[in-house]
Image (cartoon, rainbow, N blue to C red; front, side, top):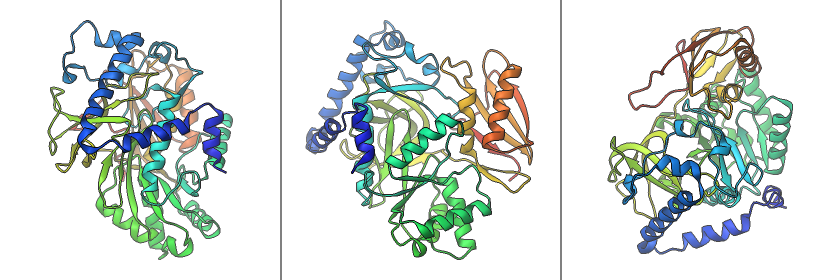
Length: 436
């Protein structure tokens, strides 16, 4: 029984319709694919101009005769109450609602209509099938965090059970915990690993230290999927040697779904079914293949909420081998993350602060940006941009979240700023350690 697919259907996500639509898109001849993209681009812009007051206000009265005349949408533009950004006939109950991780330093709440979300799910399944992984049947070893509040924790555990995921919490990656991870692989028939690059890399280094190849103690393993952070070639080699199976790169974002996925030939294929992805220059003009620029994404099917010419916050290069039906990502710049090392020996991936951000952000978008820097073994600076300082209640709430997710007896220094220092690429790095 495909329990997760059934749960989506029970919650009125039209997965069968989404599956049929994706199959029809795949069958469009290559010489007609550019026309399909152009048609869908026009349809989604027209829809939101006619049905979404937020987008009409965002565009303003200016004429948009050409695609490149459409203004770029940034994460800051979306940091306002979600109800203000929903299209007519959509609300919080008949849409899929989620929050971004804030890994770029710009967290916000988003929505997808149910068909769009079903297409996202089926799109992931399509790409995983390239490597013999079926999301409805393959058992996943999931190297992610998990909410620690009662209801959030329970909800994730239920989702894990029905979607064949077994959670390896990355909040503590000390050697004691990694040994526990190893013991679980000895007892279970996992088909694949999926998780944060830094967490899987630390586990791989532990395996190499113990002179263990994971595939030898868990022969059912077929694939390792790393996501959320940049995978360097030298780290990929470490992981493949330690785990004994192929490692593939996944690039995605919660607000748009799968952006790119590595095929068996090592090509990082961009999702061209329900997204339109372009690389633009400083003047927001589309760059030719092979040129480096900002990655801009349009969700072609999201009618609940406009994601049109949206700057995801990354810099990339599209391969010169790309075609409209097979766009290939040659390079992704960014998506790296440090790890925090604590006095008690605990090792915490920087993306753990994703769970801390859930206590910082709210739907009003009052906190615009934030970054966390570890300055000493027990000290962290939290720099943020907003109109007012955090009050005592807010700082207490954040401190409690840090204690819950990161560790105890840590010193937090809050610093409100007008703006935050960015890298040369213009991207904020949410977490940096100065002690490693």
